[in-house]
Image (cartoon, rainbow, N blue to C red):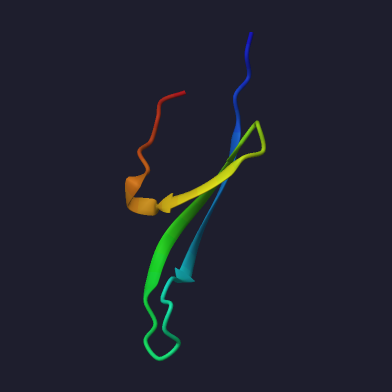
Length: 50
């Protein structure tokens, strides 16, 4: 039996590289059982039946 799990956080983050003009994006940070973390736009996430 294998158990898979993940932790996720959704934040609004200023992704602009120019301090004079902010650009905000809603990002999801996801960490799997391996400990590796990745980020993606929240719009890229899809629910999965368990």
